[in-house]
Length: 73
Image (cartoon, rainbow, N blue to C red; front, side, top):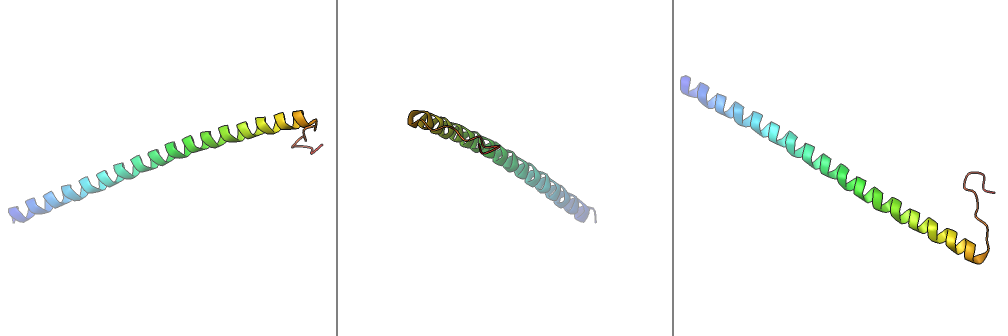
């Protein structure tokens, strides 16, 4: 009986360790995904800002006036 209890206790510790490891792994994956999305968002924002600067410069070169995006005037 003592032997069976020891085996069950070892299995229980193994299961608890596996659950804790899985939670830690999922947490790291989520953290990594958040970091990746943040970096991609920063790149996207930088590219949009560059396109806006180019558009403003092109409008100035061509003598066209900018349209206000809020009022569309």
